[in-house]
Image (cartoon, rainbow, N blue to C red; front, top):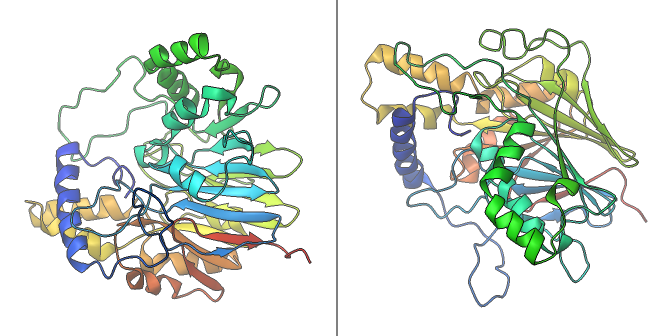
Length: 400
């Protein structure tokens, strides 16, 4: 799941995911079907599907896996979580998981100029700063910049995401001594993170800017911390998603309006869901969250609700492989399930929002066979779809 499942201590998480890979690999079904593109080097076979031809506004699922994408003994090839809303030629990214850049190219989203670059990318929206949602963010900057292919001179890429948490999360299990990473700023937000990435790769960037005529990175990408309503971040360790009276206004241009709300991905804070409204319709992304009142309010009447999902049986199988007492096991299970939405919970969430389509993504685990997720439609009366990498869905009325 998310990198991975909340604040479980690192050694236990390693054991959890090793066990999960074995369990999920043993139950994985047949290989993903589809036609592999002709190439000198074989590429993974992807089940995608394009229902968006002829639509002005379309949703493109780039990667649909939650958590790490390195599965032992599995034939699944989901990329890390990332999606795009495309309006005309303009592209808006939601999250940048591992493999985002390759999927962006495979989906045909690069500009049609000979450079095949990111000049059509207008903005990036990060739901939260777990690594499975941002592992593709540094490559976006580092590989997008050479040749001037990141934004344009008069329209830099705008990046929006969480600000500083403001407090370290509690320790789980309690009582362990845990020295903080980067004690001077142990909770960087999106602006901090972007600056630190650029510092870490300054040798490369300065070489490309000074020696190969790449543009100034600071003129091509501008990061923003999303401002919270007054009082919303007062106690992130107690209230992860205080009820908001209205959506947070994040971004608006001539094609799209983006609003957000806080969702409950404890102990992560802030964590956001995003809604995109265009002249053709609306798409809402849940981000990572357990059941949360703010999400149905934001997603009300959406044409598409893209929602995360976790399989509690997978969690149980994973915990069975860890050396835990019954009390420890129960505490870990609640800790993990409490940060995500289970198969049984997703349908009622979409129903309460009145979403016209429920589209699953951010699968936990990402290497399950598709049939395991069919139960998520229980309690939902709308159009139910299983998201796959490179799937495209049109929004609104197809032009004639």
